[in-house]
Amino acid sequence: MNDKSITCGIGPFPGKEITSYSIPSLGISGIISDTNISLVSDTLSSFTPLVAKFTTTGESVSIGNVTQTSEVTANSFSSNLIYTVTATDGTSKDYTVTLTAPRTYGGSSLVLWFKADSLNLSDGANVQTWNDFSGRGNHLTQVTFPTRQPVYRLNQVNGLPALNFSQASLTSMSYSGGTGFSSINSGSFFLVFKMPQTHPATNLLLVGSANGREINIGASPGNELYLWRNGSGLTPPSVNSIPVTTFIAIASVQNTNVSWQEYWNGDLKGNATSNIESYVTGTDGSLSNGNMDGDVAEFLFFDSALSQNEIDKVFCYLRAKYKLIATTKSCGI
Image 1 (cartoon, rainbow, N blue to C red):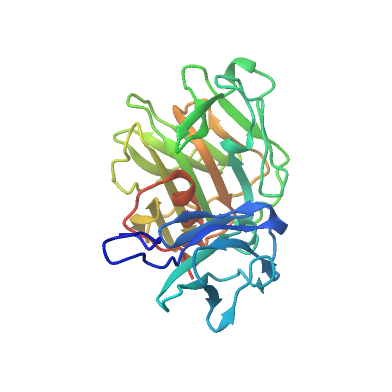
Image 2 (image 1 turned 90 degrees about the vertical axis):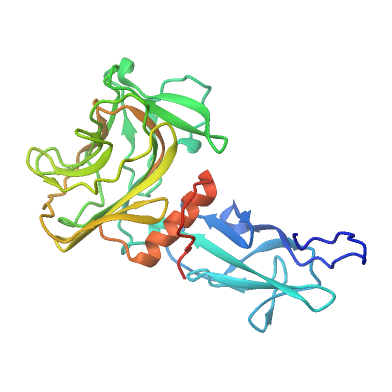
């Protein structure tokens, strides 16, 4: 039974819900799921007090002992906020508000961020340019070979679009003269991806044409995630069989040559502390080198190893946006 005012034989139950939530100054609205409210900003680069706008069925709303007034009270969103909604009968309900701000994570090391829902195209349209939301201007393009452009598909995951990449068409997009790449070895990526039922080896060459980081999903012998040093060896796979025909948020976080972790929708699926490849960052890269089969809804790459708190916040946003299922429910702190 939910907490909305309903009649159930003994009379109505007083409401104590937040029914809408937004931050007007950032132009963003929250996704409300049970008692979690998730927001994301693709422009926020530092945290200053922000004012939220919300509606509620409760008598009052507070954070700790501070009363909250919609469109008036300012708060810092650098950490999660716990809103307590109190009903007329004195009972209450807590909501956790998480503002995910990728540009602030990893020491502001976000260098690539592509979102299919940022494009406004018709179903089946070819994509020539995919703008980068990291703030670095590392936009992906495919101008030279129009037949190799990915195809925009509507309503692929939770009503949102995705870009289809086909090995048969040698689909690829690339950037050159990329900015913001500085570290060696460390890196974190998040990929919302669907693998087709039948697929050959899948490649995403990200950074540097020589000794750069190359991600393989669905590579032989199974549907595992591999991290390659381009032209060299690979980091051992997690040997988890990645699902086919369904979208999943796959992440890899590497801390220099010390550790490497693989996550699915926020759940830790594999890790390694030895035989971890070294990488050299560069200014050229691509999303697929023509060998990828699958659909990409979103991709983020950080030129550093994110903290667990930052990892949780990114997954909190991705799970809410794409309705992804995970055992881990953490939205960080």
